[in-house]
Image 1 (cartoon, one colour):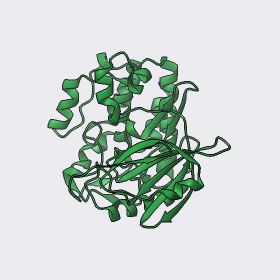
Image 2 (tube, helix red, strand yellow):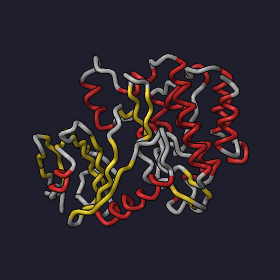
Image 3 (cartoon, one colour):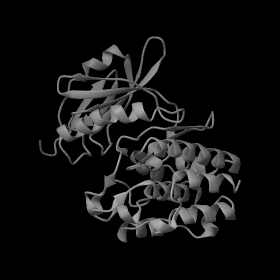
Length: 304
């Protein structure tokens, strides 16, 4: 395949792949109005609108995307596995799955479109750097009133407590998995593709799924158990990134040292007691964290 880049166009919207693909099946859902082609998941995703002005978000695996290092068959298998995950974890805060299907060698999943901005839209980072007058969703979120931030934190904890009750662990769950509608103050969780059910063991070592900004110590350790205490760490680390102000230097340290580093309290935007709750959630030793998401949620709720 090489490093060739092929530019395609659907309904006037351009996108890039490594090889041309047939996406004619999208016509049955409407017209394409946006494309997300820079994911590292192996999927390419489309926003589609029909004649009734209904919008859909359609993930497609099997195309040769630019950022994915695996095979198309791996991407297809992963996306097929998500169908049962989104079905099992159907929840008011989760994007709603409608159907799935195949077209030639492609596999796709159709969701109802959810309005909002991704809170870690890495594909726009260069744009923000070139246009400092434009606020990123992350910056806009940081400027929300404290009540809205706390409301969002409760929705995330409620969802994750539900995930835990269904016997799942959150894998690769971070701020890029979350969208926020700033007009309606509404949160939508949009990506739980790698969540796993049952006993989970780290079978990849240091390369286990997830961003180094938020991974728990056991997510670097080959053979380690990934369980409810890992879920607790994941949410705690997410809260530090959502409700704190990380310097570029400290973020870089997370990557170079292969570990999550919590902020000092002065860089935290919520209350001091909530800082203490979040800090316990990200203890390096799993035994010192809250044992379950529910107990973390109870502690968090009691402090606001």
